[in-house]
Image (cartoon, rainbow, N blue to C red; front, top):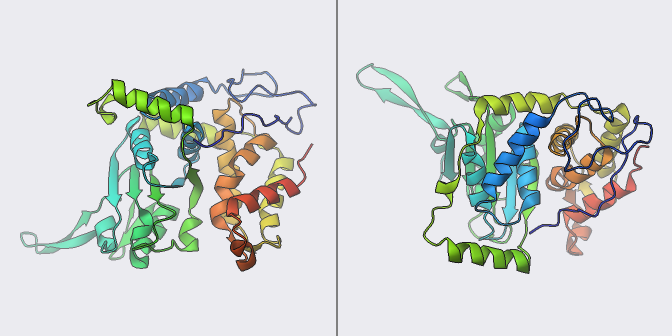
Length: 352
């Protein structure tokens, strides 16, 4: 699958006297190296979810990690990859590990906004209109092939993605907590698809590209299916986290400490996308907030209650690549947004 960048050199966070923090895969010890919170409950919950998903999914560690980071950061995720790479399955498995309501919406060209958010239906007995809620009223909503619906249906998602509420006939209805949208799309199938508006893309905290497995991982997939044929993968997954636990963990993530120099570092990265010669449209202030929340979630998953530069770098590509538009010349060269974002991040000085 995608590389997990295991060879990156860990950076020492500003303000820690040059001491090296705990390793990314080691839970922080309260009172040691600046840690003030006991992140053991969060680490245990995350590990349980990963263990459940690994019963069915081979590899894809980066995908699962970023997906969990988005959940903890209270954001929405867009999964992009070729057919057959288990995008939908991973989303369904992740949702099943959390004891919350789940719904799936298959986007098609004839889908109407009312098919997503619901509609008011006249009740003959009451002689009044009654609102029939659509599938968007759930805790975790999987939108499969999101780019197959037209603009008017996409617009129905704008309010609920940003404000976690919908307005119908002048009545405002809030979504139950927790609420998250996981969307999938195929990058190569252009027939019968519609490009997502920039305003909608900006509402996804991460866009995660799902890659092909390695040869060894493909062999492991074949072994798994050869020995466990006729086994329902979803049926083997158990809910290991409650909605209440998830809400509590989100509060823990929001309280992760970020040094002021790192806030400036994030601002410099986002600002650099607006002045780069290869970028026509730079990232918005919402990208800065996504970078902040995403790096906090990654830091917590990595076992720290403080953010280091490496956390920011780890999520920068997933936060920024879908929020920028390259210049026509750069696109003609065949360059990708991810490559340009990597250049931008490398061009910004890391605080010491």
